[in-house]
Image 1 (cartoon, helix red, strand yellow):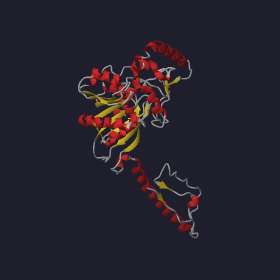
Image 2 (cartoon, one colour):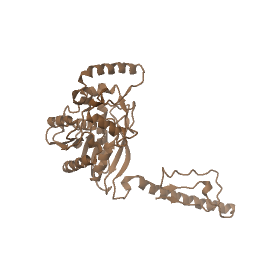
Image 3 (cartoon, one colour):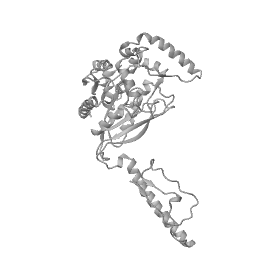
Length: 392
């Protein structure tokens, strides 16, 4: 709603009011000095003081009313549009290291017909390695909100809109703690039922979500899409093809850590296709990842273009599925494309987990098809509806 008024008075102004940018604030607009129309004859000094007081009162009243409307327009909790999912920008701390708190940026989605007097089940959605909340994580978060959940898609620490230096650090311990921090945030949210919080992780986010849920009992139901154990992937490569180079990589990381300890710049390396100099050997998953992140299909300016090289030493030491059996008796759902290169990660998680558990294939879908292809996303969402509907 746009309010615009014109003062038809002669008022001596010492300063020209600053116009409000209509793009940033579409709710209220005050004209600058050149737009004030002067039509009245001069008035006496005493009358002038009275007139100033009247005008000031009018302006304060209008500003107060406009501020109220502005708050309603920007705060989903008091909006009354019952026909659409609404999104709010939020932030919360990751305090894994007390002296270096990182502020995590998130998109909080409210369901259709959101009612502040009710408590809702909630789902945390974690993005793939190198991704951001506005991509596939945001897609699934919005679709789950359409089903009646409050959902939180967030950027990992050191990535996207979240804080932390150096940028593009991929530290598994911190990535796992991000999920706990998101759980902290939702568990005290006034509209969330703290006993009905679930988690959905996509790709590497799936591995991190499983790892967090093993000991985070506030997460009552765990689901993944195209799950990947990024530690295993970095140690072995996709399907084990990089295992021979592991020792060499660890040597290179050791050398780089010493350089950085001496004050040299942090080394950022681009994501590898895994095919070396022969593109024909590049696995389907890596070709599709390049297509998703490198074209308008999925590109976002905040996405990572590489990673901190010394992150590898942390990743080599990480295994997402160390204690996956501890998720039981809480439920685990693993959704994967039936022809995904990464399917074996979901197979392993399923084999090691205890009941209740389910491995659900999307016929004919690849790893990245599950990110955004409607024909593959929709059946996945239908399965998530059944799963979270039963357990949350």
